[in-house]
Amino acid sequence: MNLIEELKWRDLLFDVTDKEIEEVLENQKITFYVGADPTADSLHVGHLISYLVSKRLQDRGHHPILVIGGGTGLIGDPSGRNSERQLLTLEKSLENGRAITSQVKKILPDATVVNNYDWISKYDIITFLRDIGKHFNINYMMSKDSVKSRLENGISFTEFSYQIIQSLDFMHLYKENNCILQIGGQDQWGNITAGLELIRKMLGHEKKGYGFTWPLLTKADGTKFGKTAGGAVWLDPARTSVYEFYQYWINTPDIDAVSYLKKFTFMSIEETKALIEEFKAAPHQRAAQKKIAEELTVLVHGKAAYESAVRISKALFSGDIKSLSISEIKDGFKDVPSIQISEDMNLIDLLIEAKLASSKREAREFIKNNAISVNGEKQNSLDFMVKKENALDKQFTVLRRGKKKYSLVKH
Image 1 (spheres, helix red, strand yellow):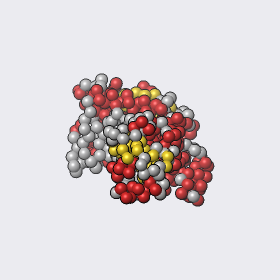
Image 2 (cartoon, one colour):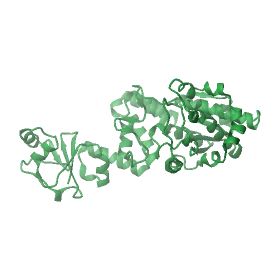
Image 3 (cartoon, helix red, strand yellow):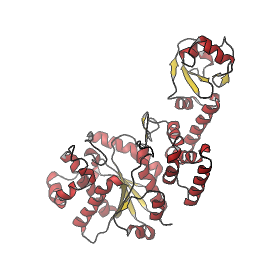
Image 4 (cartoon, one colour):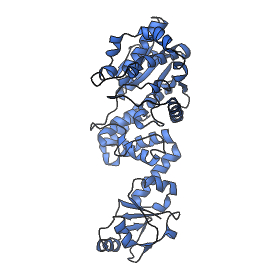
């Protein structure tokens, strides 16, 4: 199966600018590019698909260029937006660019990384308008979906000009790096085709470039992909812990699992089909979710971090808290209800304080019935005292009621 056919099977192909690209990708080793505007100091899982598709091309022998939009990020891409983006300062744009470069290099270590500020910043306004702007027809620009969708609410000249600025990227890379392909989500179609037009008009109609897009990711229930109740799921472990990242994929709804398995993992098609059948036969085993979580956590954070996330999950399920390191406890209990105490406390009173029991009578019943664990050990003494000297690393005591109800006591 050739690359385009595989992308179709994985539901990763929305449109191509030229059907010839199928033959080019199969018979040549080309250079392609994918862009990332540094709107934050971290990518989130919604960005992952760009680099996973790039990795599929790279695995077939094609060379990726990552364009950090240090220049375009100062302008703001109107694609997929119904309002203006907040403008970045140059310093913040470049700082964010450095941060996301390090994240992408973990996925695409052999990629060439460039920053479009390096060439965009060299244009003065007269040169830009005379040499570049004259090649863009206003009617043509307004017909682009990214602009058309914004006309009702209004769009600034700054964001309106974004497609011109991004077209410069494609032309520059075509000239300087022999880069003949741009890839992106379906909302980037207008920017990609604008770049191809500029290449033809400025470099000659015989110059051939290509583009293809993938469908925008959505969840089956219609909610936004990559979002949780707590906000975006970031690649930066300081923003989203490795455990939270892992759990996001483990908690993939069954209805989305097959789609994600095809899009996000790098098993062969035969292996993927086999796992899909296994998952459909026993969805409660969550084989698909476990595979997705494993591949993506290892890819983004490394094998040791993945193994730590698995260890936290198993410990929380089994109650074997003492097997965890302090950093793993902090990650695993980040969103667990917590209380802070400044002195030793009777377990009965502490259960009420931690809202694991509603009254002293109920707390006694839980303790008598062996329903309470302290730092992973069952506790059935009504006189038990929770002391800082017995806390994990003298910092934390983990209370557990039943199998799933936890509270973290901070001393």
